Amino acid sequence: MKSLKASGHQFAESSTQIQTLHQEVVDVLQLPTFQEKLVKASLFPLKTKNIDTLQINVGKMCNQVCKHCHVDAGPDRKEIMTQETMQECLEALKRSKIEIVDLTGGAPEMNPHFRWFVEEIAKLGKHIIVRCNLTIIVANPKYNDLPDFFKQHQVEVISSLPFYNADKTDRQRGQGVFVDSIKALKLLNAVGYGIEEGLKLNLVYNPNGAFMPAPQESLQKQYKRALLNEFGIVFNDLYAITNVPVSRYLDYLITSKNYDGYMEKLINAFNPVAAEGVMCRSMISVGWDGALYDCDFNQMLDLLVNTPVKHIRDFDIEKLSQRNIVVGEHCYACTAGAGSSCGGNTIQ
Image (cartoon, rainbow, N blue to C red; front, side):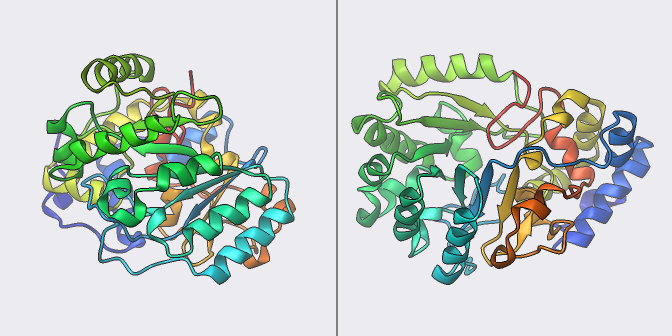
């Protein structure tokens, strides 16, 4: 396979550059575009189904700098959702029948209004998911009580753990992350997470190389056995998520000269059944500034929703429910094999 001229390229900063790069690799490989695949599967234009989730990125600040991070989050990021924008999210939730609120970041807990926001969402009777990186719980004494706070509001905790040993985890997420993650998981177990009904603790596996995840069910069995035997840790489910070629993971693919090969794998593994069940059909993604997107990945590429309703302050569930979803070549990651979403495989 001929390498792209971009294989020596340093990370493309703009969304336009990234989209152009993806289009180039499809041309070089002489393979169909994502839109052409959808047309053949009678799925274009991709339409919404029942919108049941509002995923809110409350900021890009994080205590970690993970190699696979599609948000490019880190301690130096200043993009933080204001309390005013959070209030606009609450008003939108009051005007809709959306039942699930998925809070993400960065480390969402680092937003100064995070706890207030969770409390206000809980008052609306919504099911709350927090995407916690685990290490934030033990990073600073002011976060040590997060397990109790989560339990108080029946928050579902979803946390990334690249593998069940230190070597692979630390290579992807930083030195010492595995040890701190184990400490945090034990604290969550201690208050009932992964044990008591209603206290869900789910883990996320992301490959640490240029390959797709192994079958989710077999990975879950391995994780459960290893974490229980080695550390006495239990959890509910494991989500295997395919890495999307944007931000830091794209940079890794390019600098390691794996970009064209990885894209070819995704394209050849396209599954129309997975495409039918992609998460963007049942969710709305809210950026830290209140802008609206079809999913978290489109958010990172500045691909706003294809409706006149572009901001949470103008939220209109009827108009958003009739929109055509904005797609691109990065969407191959969510439709390869058994499918990938923020909740793992879309095909069980």
